[in-house]
Image (cartoon, rainbow, N blue to C red; front, top):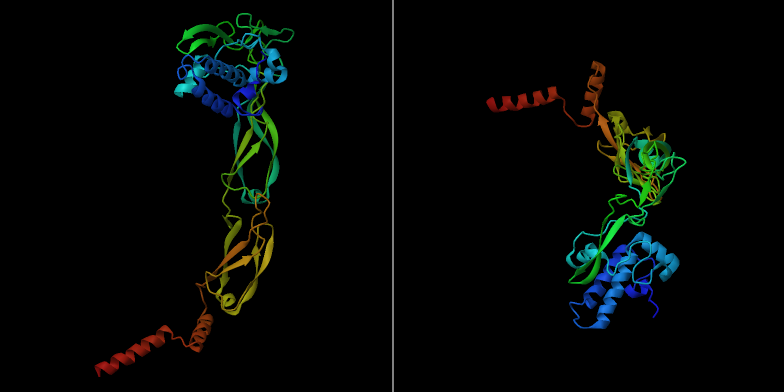
Length: 372
């Protein structure tokens, strides 16, 4: 009788993630497990079928071979040819399913490389308007001498004859769940699956070396403190033909001496004179790009905030641009000439204000009136 498709057995799509595979298997295993269905041959068959499908689809190399060749890749005995077949997924997978343990088996297929983090400091203007630059990134790369094989030039590595290139040795064992196959790391190739007779003199057989690499990156306009930029495929090299990891650039923005950021808006403060505040004026105000003209109305009070539309920071997602908010602070002169003092006193009197000397004279008259 022809075998059912493994994806059909678990009731999942062909692009299902490992978490989806595990979830589907756990559901079927609980339903058809022999302990829950004693003397039920049909349930035992479905349990074995689901476990075999799980064993294949959870292994990257087995799944890749199955997706390409289907059941032709199997050895006809429920195992997977070239990868060390098993009736179940091994003790580690059984315990992981039923007891929540972490005893999953070691993976020996292609492995994705690690991600790399780089911290970058930008000026206020660079963060606001973005830039392109080259950065130096220390990362693991495939050895250029051996091409990542690990063997010295002119020599080759070959599959380990003891484990058949899987990196694991498997041993059948009877358990309360039935006959299972337990795996352990091959002691000859130490889990690599290959034997290198003459290691590469550059990488010493590892196939990888650490280098500083210049990578060109583009920082978008509008980034802020804590922003993170992902550069796909620029992390460390993967193992056994696996893809590279990613590069993550974390942004830190230096404070500005004049501007302060509030979302996509910028805030600043400018001083104006008493005369400008009283009579009104038109002043030039620095912006992120150059300068702009700001009209100060007559009678402006200190703390008044004005807005310049569209002079803030571009939105990092491309949704417009913020504004610039300008707070004015009226500057009070500290050194006056005698002439300037008299002019201010005259101005005060015209506004109904009394000088200090006039106030003294008034209180003196009041005192004399009470004291007789």
